[in-house]
Length: 175
Picture 1: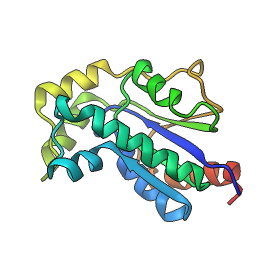
Picture 2: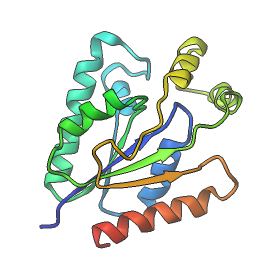
Picture 3: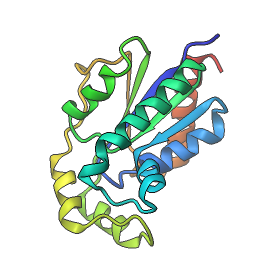
């Protein structure tokens, strides 16, 4: 059986992580998406952050990722991992799994704010959005990973960027 690969997508809220992952899924049949936002929705029927639920959200996310990795899938972990501490906690859950980092270029705050205002659902409160944006720390090569890739999803070549990302994963995974 083929070993699974964990793909961590790191970027500020509304930087394009979920959209990018959705595009990758079209090219990678063996991809399983583990989304903390979707788990929050399953538990409470909305996407609101609730501190009292977070340990359950993350435990379910880890369980789903472990199960998919054990089955040999590519796991796209879709969460706003704004700093090395959060990313480190995730990596500790999967010490023997190859990890790919997809780091997203931080768009201007105005772009993030406009994207949030255009959303019909899952809008983030303005104060929380600004705090997460300001607190976001771009991953460094020193964070424990096997492969590291930076993507700029703010440009017009977004579909080409998705294709490049899919090819990158498939080359490592072995199609």
